[in-house]
Image (tube, rainbow, N blue to C red):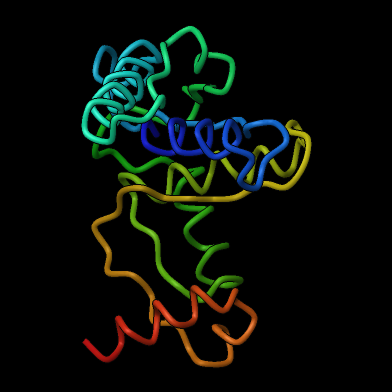
Length: 164
């Protein structure tokens, strides 16, 4: 979440792809105090400071600047880390049926339940992107037909990965 938060903020600041940086909705799957906004914002800010030192570029961002971009979704953790939830299991089934790949109960299933809820409630403006940053399952394979609609740079990258 911290990397997505920083990356989208810097992309917007430099005019790459965003007029306004998107809202990052981080889904809590670990208990307090492990997953709290302060920690996510601190990680993003510290990463920006390190990036500024390493590159010599003006990319440092403080926590207060990043805070409006971050929402921590707390409703889908259930009993806690490692415990499956009914909403997560339902999301896993929907994902399998409609996306054709598996999710798991600890990370990706709970996050998928949250994104399904966001889409059903139409609670965010603009497009919604599900980006699972942690899962114990292997990535699904991508067919050439699915890749045909991807940007050219992504297709070249995926071809290099396949050949490696």
